[in-house]
Length: 410
Image (cartoon, rainbow, N blue to C red; front, top):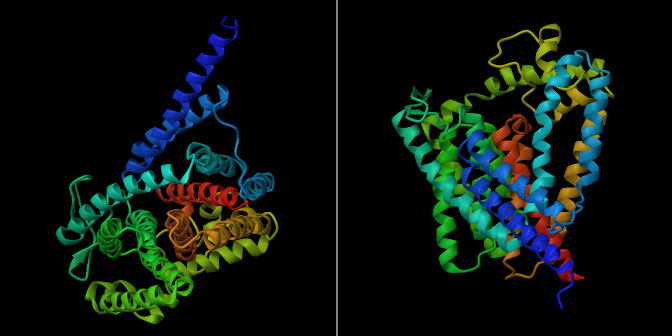
């Protein structure tokens, strides 16, 4: 005889299965649309969110804790404290609304259930990013963006690509992440067929990255490859150094690249360095809690270093932007967050066997983090919603895989 509670319980299980399926498809939709636009990827973000929420309600999911839970909470706490002592509390409260991006990390930690799902999501992301990279290359050569119906900025006989985004720095940050994800399977190769596909994706995306003329993204890309070379096996290290060195030499000889960098004196006395000096002036007056979240632009006229500027909405340096906004408290939480991430992900990577399919996933996350952090020394990528959401997605997937590896090794 069937128990009275059997049918309601079966319904709850089915509902939980459907919810988890919605969350899974939300991950795939997000991966497909993340290189396209904010409105596009928010469809996947929303589907994943609805699926995760319903899965919790029906008992299909339990909350997964991660090493970043505490540092993220401390970072948000530092931002809230900065609002209390803000020089412009209304502006800080408005800026706080933009911090919804941080929810991307816990969302995808719950929505990505295992390394197999993440591998599929990265494959989808790789295809999408490669197609858009082809579009960006056409922009560099043709000088026109059909999507936004506008002419592009010329530099050294070619043009600055923006992809489907509105700004070349945003596209540079996005393709930096996806190119490094494509590079990871080549640094820890598996099947030859898969390696060939990723090599093609990397070549096209790297060309698009060059065409974005985002210098900070270029530097982040080179730094990530340097880290990969230092940690790789001898034969892979030699190949990476030779290929990377040759690519840098060739790129440096290109007139558009030379025109973009200019002279050393221009780099040392650029509008960006004046933005940094201005940020330090603001921070010195508000060292512990900062001047308040999002107040840099408002305080700029009072603290600015004399000279020419192109944009004054932020410090164009991740660390300095945090210092001016939430002071030493915010920066300490930020450093703690990255310490936790690298310790966990690198530890899982070292434990993985040579042929383990999880190794490229872990390495890709590590390289993306290095690239964005180094590039972030001259650009606030985490204020670019398109770049920041994609990065938090990658960090979440990396720690899901690290958790899986830890469970296997126990």
